[in-house]
Length: 342
Ligand code: SIN
Image (cartoon, rainbow, N blue to C red; front, side, top):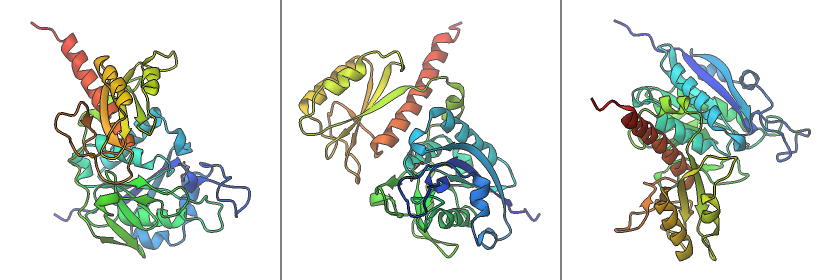
């Protein structure tokens, strides 16, 4: 039987600079993010019909925010919508327009929570812009075109990001520049590929959806009222116990601290006063993971170290992973406590 290829590319809007506008076309800084709806963004991309090659676009506004203001509620809603769209037989892939500032966290979250069975067959492509839609030379339209080209490419799968023609895997992608249109890097891993004139040139394997997955987490994040509180602290010259001690104090506006990611120096090294405070946090039941403040490389395990390493994740991605782990563990613990021993 001749199986029909899925036709639709779904584009979910969440805001960001790609949807931003400024009063003057020459202003690339004093703009407001998240002003233009995703339908209007798509309508303004010349050449889209050629890149679609017979596919159809379906769009939906999931949020309209500056991604520095990303919330757990929007993350849950977005992950759920992506899963629902991917599960449709007529959907070939999902594109998400997103601010650059927390794009790597959202990409990692989706990689961790979307079922592997869906990720292995269909792509989720985040894209963005470093110049607002009103700029003299906006990068958003080209990035959107490239994202659609990637989403409909043969064999595309997994969660990826595309910016300035470079394709990155969710696990590797990191914003590394505050201003340049080519603001992202995959570090040691290198890019997955490039989009050139609407065509993908793959130079690496498609992302494997098997590492850092958190099975059951998608259901959990849509059920919980409050996400576990995990904060990030940094090591630096003259470091001390003060920040960790302050974080351990109860505050009315936040749930109790459950986890700490420490962005250590170099291979996750820690000032002895900070290390002692983290030990006390651990004794108080707070989970501590050691990442690095270095932009590249991964913290290598050190035998006998007091704190587990972040398993190759940057501090912000390790925080997402730990929140998901704590949510899943919390559910297991509650289920064990509630189960009838008879
Ligand atoms: C944002 O992250 O929403 C604003 C900054 C950007 O998209 O470059």
